[in-house]
Image 1 (tube, rainbow, N blue to C red):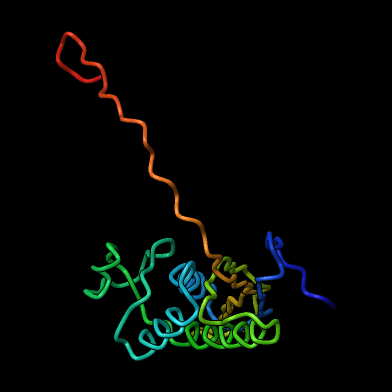
Image 2: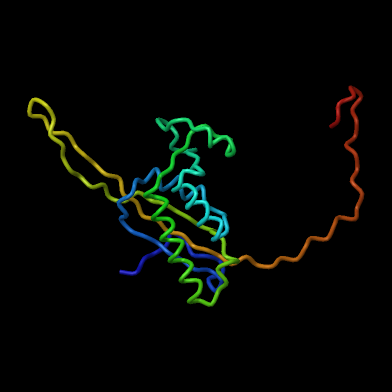
Length: 179
């Protein structure tokens, strides 16, 4: 069955796509990792994820931050909570490597590629059981995810012409406050 993406890129000629289905890595960690690398250049994202796996940098947790410990490395991202999700970083690195290969197959320059779209969706939970005291049995669930991303080549834009009209000051009211 062919993978259907949630949306299609505007210009598919300078875009390469990659995805993974039913990946047994934690959804919340993968979501935060994806949000951390969204918008980065391909080489920058790969270097960042390598640093996270060595614990030289950190993934800031913004949406799923409750119950996550506070780390001093998060100060540069202006948040308090963060983690080093190694398994999510390894999978994202493998997706980026796959996308880089897809870019070279389409004869695109990987040095000019940046991550335009990353989406992490919940997959069907795996159900196991764990045995407790006094004959009880509890659920032991895992939370896998689907990941899709595409990389786009940066287009050389034309510099905007500076505005030649002089800006007017805001009129003053009688009270002295600007309108």
